[in-house]
Length: 317
Ligand code: XMP
Image (cartoon, rainbow, N blue to C red; front, top):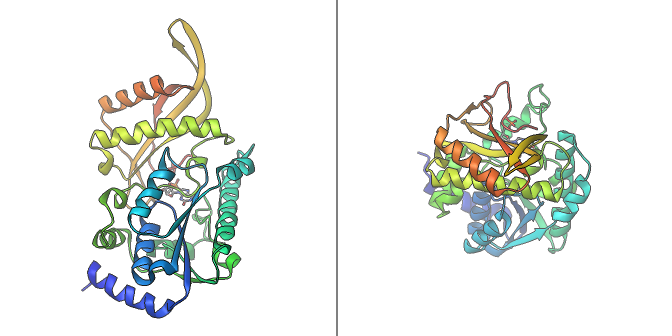
């Protein structure tokens, strides 16, 4: 019978056996999978594991600092790398979504590789790959998988010439969560919504600038905190805000304004392959709209996305 406790026991033993005294490097993202993989590896090999967490400048507001703190609290040996400027510079003027994904994926690999090379004698690359990722990458050349290139960091092991260790590659998401819980990882972290690797970069529907990122972070912060405060966060599979490349006319006092529109998105799903938009209460949407327009300079209109997948995707890019 599969239980989290027995999985942890056998996996830790296997990892010790496989890795021995070698050093392992692992990229953390703040998400459930990489976190559980990190804690599991840490349990097996302790400080022989070095984790790297890259700030690509496209994370949620305060995310980098908060997540880095909680990783340190879990006893992980983690290096936080602030690479915002590098990403912003390389993304300047880029509007095509696939081009953005390529640049973000490539920069991540380069930054990660540079940091990993500062550690002597690393032999292994740890990854939080789970079973559905394995299946999905089998069909990567199929027509559906090429709609968007999700596997942004697929080139990492080849580039680094490391052996790969993926302790979660036979688990489904709910099993990963149960293992995480048994490892003592906080519910707050285990219950987090999925967040795409390219982050807010694919929620800014035009070229990316630090100012647009700031505006989107503020709006996203209000929406996500609102969901939590209203007890709606756990009823939603994923939520976020899109900054549209559209300006519209508004009024503020007796002034005419001509500013940006954001779209709120909240979906229910099991695996992200199909999704339904969530019927959030009107009172909640009204409150979010008011707060965002009043508090976020640069936004004067909020709309709610009522499209399901298919045919609409969850992200707008
Ligand atoms: P879509 O927009 O295709 O999203 O309906 C399905 C799920 O995948 C996430 N997503 C990505 N994740 N890199 C990622 O790591 C990406 O390029 C990417 N694009 C979409 C999306 O957030 C949703 O959970």
